Length: 78
Image (tube, rainbow, N blue to C red; front, side, top):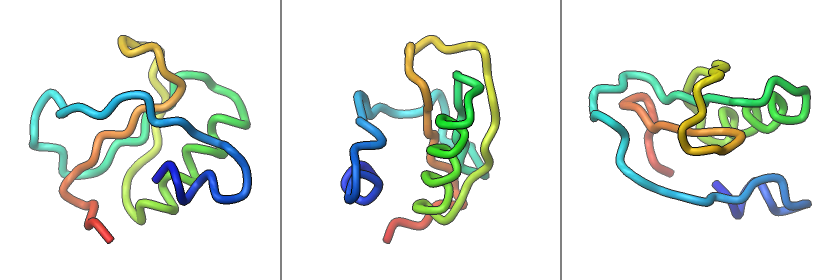
């Protein structure tokens, strides 16, 4: 994800990879924590690159990041 989205310019930096709180996510979750056009655009690019997921906003940001992605059962690795 990082290498494909940064091919033209640096858009994202993956800072942490860890297991989700459970493994029952039917849909991939792309959660953004800053409600700006730039962050929303990056979330849409992530969704397009993954070929799955729903985008939603949250004001609860325990990891102190701009976007968090939780892979669900709808994601098929390429």
